Amino acid sequence: MDRICTDRVYSGMPATDLGTEGWHKPWSGGNGGSCVEAMRLKDGRVALRQSTDPDGPALIYTHLEMKRFIQGAKAGEADFLLA
Image 1 (tube, rainbow, N blue to C red):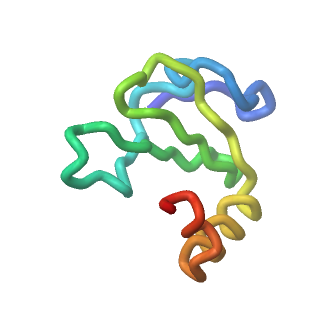
Image 2: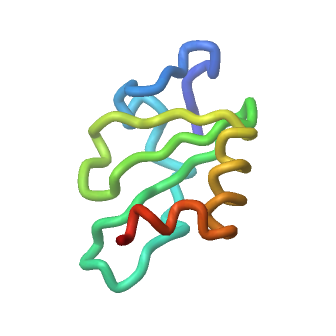
């Protein structure tokens, strides 16, 4: 699992530059294969990519940003996205 140095990781970079191993589909389901894939980086940040475009851009979030997002989603604060 050879990944690039995390000081060269930036939001919008090609997801393939992060390597092919270590991506997980924590939110997959009966959606026809279109889901978000996540990778935890060595420095604790999280990379997200679209499973249908694995060569496309990766969005990079800090540990705190992901924690707050997940807490907010659990509390219903993102429900407006489904309305």
